[in-house]
Image (cartoon, rainbow, N blue to C red):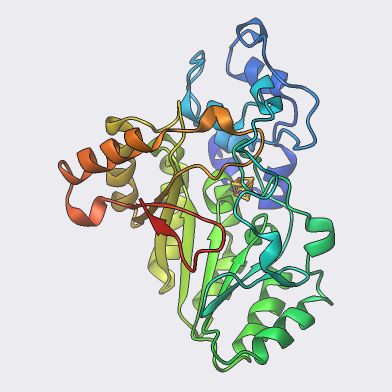
Length: 333
Ligand code: SF4
């Protein structure tokens, strides 16, 4: 007999996505939390509420401080227009060379392949990104690919977004094929949160596509808390680890009320490693408008890094970094 849990694992990722929560009240109801607990809940926001069912299942029922819930719940604090917080906090728009292509750092370019994500994280630094103008639809990818073809000093392409794994396998295959024809490109990097928040996305077609790709692929996941990795995620990631030669790294954002304490960061690093993922970056929050309530001050961030260094093996300690507009790489803190 197929249990409801097994059945949910086997449905397509598109179907799983359709079952996402799009109303915060419905999520609170699912979590058995009375909405009166959140008098500051925000209902009208241009950055829509969106949470996959399987991610909600990893939240603890009746826990109003759940670290996963905090990442997705829109609060009135988002309307705080603090002057140090900006619509384009890391200078993305200055780096746009073609619609959908950002050339910020030497040797690599980033493609914002889609505006879509399986989940909307309230602290997202691209929540105001002008995807409408800068989104390379399939016919526009050619202008980006032409730019890369003419730049022999570019060796690495980063697929980002939104989330590049919001694209269908067919569209991804088309893009990957075109990238493969660029002989000076040595490797491909995919930045994604979809594989974690919507593990159904790791389907047979994606595994086949990635396992047959001839150039090295690095997948940089985005996981902020160990509770994001449950059995379903571990099972879904297995074929990626066993059937492909992909390197799995993780980047987290240091977020107030989510992971800004030593036990949470230790557990995150240990769980990542046990799942075959190397902790890579721990980012200070990018100062995007509406995310100030997630900020952790730099002294506390340094203290936490120091405490992590004193308690974990070196390979479990992510690099603490920040992004400064105009710099040629991430800046170590
Ligand atoms: S998945 Fe990444 S790009 Fe999408 S909303 Fe979350 S942080 Fe932003």
